[in-house]
Image (tube, rainbow, N blue to C red; front, side, top):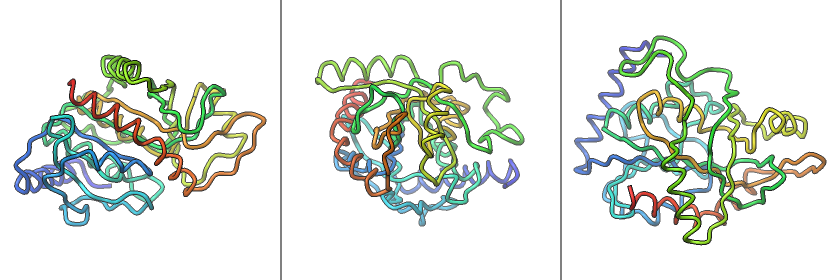
Length: 275
């Protein structure tokens, strides 16, 4: 773990490099998760940077995560998009997992859209459903704000309303207009990389979770600490329901996510146009 001043300096260095390589100055950032890269096709890309070329940036190692930072236009607005994220299970510490969210703040972002693929535990859910994330449960073994407080954010940030209620309402309105089925629920964040056992699915559901995945929660916590408004969608790619045993693979998760992508793209594009 890097000391807080060195870490802050790295973030400034990265943001300065990015600003020197693109003329765009978006206020909206998007993170695209497993199998959810189709939104990139909707973005009029102006600049694209492989993560490996960006100073201090981690590199995504997961299949289905392309590993590029994109700048362009979506819904008539300038956006920055991360085509692939960084996971705790890859061996990164939390400063690295959430590095991009710190850079977002340094670049002047105001709104953070996040997507993921997750396993559904709510018996009303179907594979391919889009779940609005209304809250989360953090079960990561390391907290992303552990250690000295990062400058500019509160030591004890309020988590009462992590996911912006106005953005959630906008998504509901758009889904209603477009005839898109939406479900809502609580996302449980775990470290992975194993998929859940039947007993773990039962436990997480009884704790109040509706879907479970291996990302998003640390990113969102840091985004809120930095003062960004947050909107999140989970694509339900598999189901872990009580009394139902279903084997799951990463490839199956990718395929299910890919089928649901056009609907998620519609919601993101329409929301960004209306911001």
